[in-house]
Image (cartoon, rainbow, N blue to C red; front, side, top):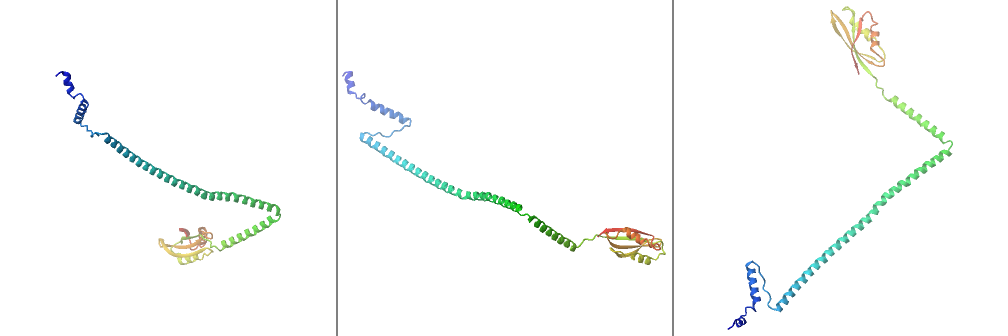
Length: 248
């Protein structure tokens, strides 16, 4: 048998694509790459394409539904916002008239005051004897107020300034009659003078001095007056000193 005949009987060259595909799958399996079984017929290939088309249509329908829902949500939000804006726009004019009215009231009141002043000025120009009557009335009211104040002041008690004075009255010697000396001192009487308690205080060598208290009104009686009046009794009194002076 010739070599050509051997080649004609061997079918390896005609099945080379199959061998190449088997070799490729073998190496891909070794590298961890897996392949799904390919359909062997044209009918199976057509069925796979239809299934893929149906799944894609279902996914598109779901996306379409989600988009419709999002659009509806946006529309509801826009409608709510429009309603709120409408409410706010309606509320603004209700608050503003109060301010406008207040401003209008102020503006309107000002001319009224001016008009009153102008009318008063016109009346002053026309009334030639009104000023005299007003002056007489004002003088009468003033006199009444002064009289009432004077009467009220007269009824109010006046605070009188008073002082408490302690006097030391010294005799000439130990033979001086101290009872008579005290009698002479108390004989000094005047408005605003009131004598108080007294006692005899030893000085030395049997001599005693008269220590007597009195209350005086400052505006009416002073210490100089008391010394002058008491020292007039020369037969009994040698000197007069102020031992203590206190305001009451």
